[in-house]
Image (cartoon, rainbow, N blue to C red):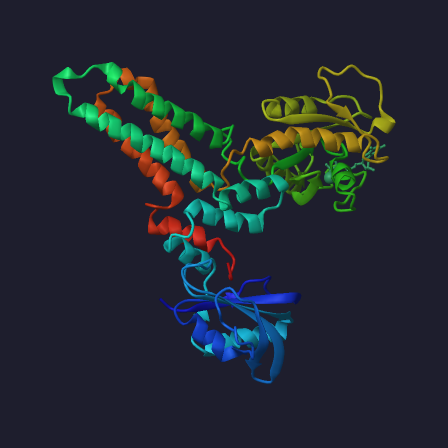
Length: 441
Ligand SMILES: Nc1nc2c(ncn2[C@@H]2O[C@H](COP(=O)(O)OP(=O)(O)OP(=O)(O)O)[C@@H](O)[C@H]2O)c(=O)[nH]1
Ligand SMILES: [Mg+2]
């Protein structure tokens, strides 16, 4: 297999230190061509050796560490060169290694080699990519549990348990006429245990997007209710245009809002009403489609005006979703009886109540974040849910199923679990997983 190399630290930026990683059979030869040291222990495995890079026109102090196969990240011979991270030096080091036997690594190629060399499972590899991309603490924790092998270990335990159940059932198959249904009880108990363990890893809701680490909150309401003002107040930034003209916002405006240890993707939308204005109508359509993917809707009611029919209609359309009913303009509130209970009153103008609103958003979305279960990717959730459904089917209908059928269903569940860890994942799945990595990982 070709020896590959890439910059493993942040791309296109200068940093205190940069690391170029070389992996493959000739990694050591390539490293020797670009790095020299008087240290007698140079190129001893796992020894951090100080020396110089040998590059055209650049003399640069560097550290080289050699990881001898199979005790390396990829399982191949790996050399890591660490040096001062200027972009010109980095370019020169990469040029040096590419002219001395290495080819540029594709995104995720180091980790893909680690996977094929049995250093990690597919879920662990995905966890590594997700740690790098994690936007929230919850996301990072989840990715960490995947990358650290905790989830892989649980899945392996489930598989062992199921293989045990299958072995017991296969013995029963030989009993022929002496068979009685109770003989299957120990196997069914094993399957039930596995079912419980697997359930704890699955997302707690069916929304299909809860394992996406950034929950989405959408601000909606009638024109002029103060939606854009509220966005600005929450972001503590003059992000959106605010005017007294109803129908100011047309496009959906999105920004990330950090509350405690979660990040929320917050969007401001066009005020919803019956309009004949073509541009405004398009904005309203965009607002309505934004709602479909919302984990939380901040429905803004203007406390300074009488309740309108438009608002009641809007309230009815979203009431089945996760909604926070926010009364805005508390500083100019008029007296009226509302047919619904507000969750909170705020003034986007004075900032009154904004901190409490943040707390409410946090408590509603923290559960969404945590409801994500153990997985970080749709691929993982689909495979785990399929295995779960098959095992649940066995337990539910065991009395109607022959032992043969139960064994076949166990094979189906085991195949889905093997797909999850990557043992029998298709080439397309594997290629897609690693294509989502960054270069150098
Ligand atoms: N008194 C008072 N006025 C507010 C408050 N929040 C917003 N406003 C005013 O209400 C008007 C509309 O505010 P926006 O934030 O543009 O309202 P919007 O809901 O985004 O309006 P559209 O984009 O047109 O749908 C502006 O004149 C704001 O200054 C508030 O808390 N109190
Ligand atoms: Mg607006």
